[in-house]
Length: 224
Ligand SMILES: [Zn+2]
Image 1 (cartoon, rainbow, N blue to C red):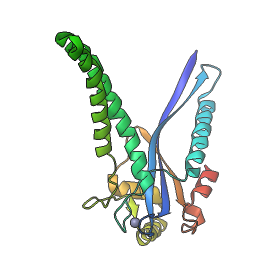
Image 2: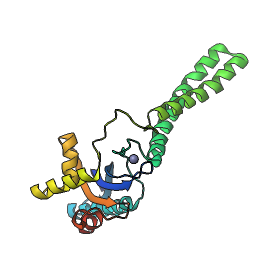
Image 3: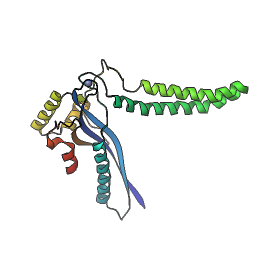
Image 4: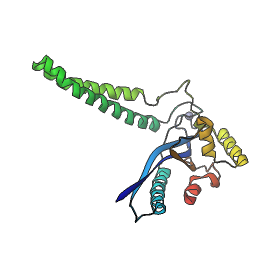
C-alpha cells in the first residue's frame, strides 16, 4: 500500500539588487509557498526515511531557486518603481488565469445564446463572444499586475534600503534571531499555521558581498 507525505513550505530569501531605474541598491524579501510531497510503501518506508526523501527533494528545489537571477518582487525604496522583469512576470499569471477563465465561462454560455438567436448572427455570437471575453480577461489580468511606472502611495514593507538592512542584521545579532523570520514577523505578526516557514538566507546579486557570510544563502543552504 502506498502512502504519501506532504508538507507545505513557505520559503523566504533576502535578495539585494541594484535598481535598473535609479541605480540604488536595495534588499527585498523573495518568497514562495510550495507543497513538497513524497510517496513510500507502508511497512517498508519508515517515517524517517520518508522525511529524509522529502527534505532532499525540498533542498534540491531550494538550491535551484537560490541560483535563479530573478525571483520575487520588491518596490525600489529609492525611486519607488518595480524592475521591468518583475512587472513582466506579474502580468503573465493573472492574464492567463483571467483570460482562460472568462473564455471558458463564455464558451459554456455562448451556444445557448447562439441557439436562441440562430442564423449567421448566432454563429457570430458563438465565435466572437468567447474571443472578446478572453481578451477582456487578459486586459483585467494586466490591470492587476504590478505598475510599470512610479508607484505613488504604495508601501512595500518587504523592500528596504541598505541602512535598514544593516539595522535589521544588527537587531537580530543582538536578540540572536533569524533576520528573515524577524522581518516576516514584523509585518505579519504570526506564521501561517499549516506551513513550515523556511528562511534560506540572503543573497547579494550586485556582486558587492553586502551580507556577512553567516547569513548568506550559500552558508545556510550548505548547513541545510
Ligand atoms: Zn530605484
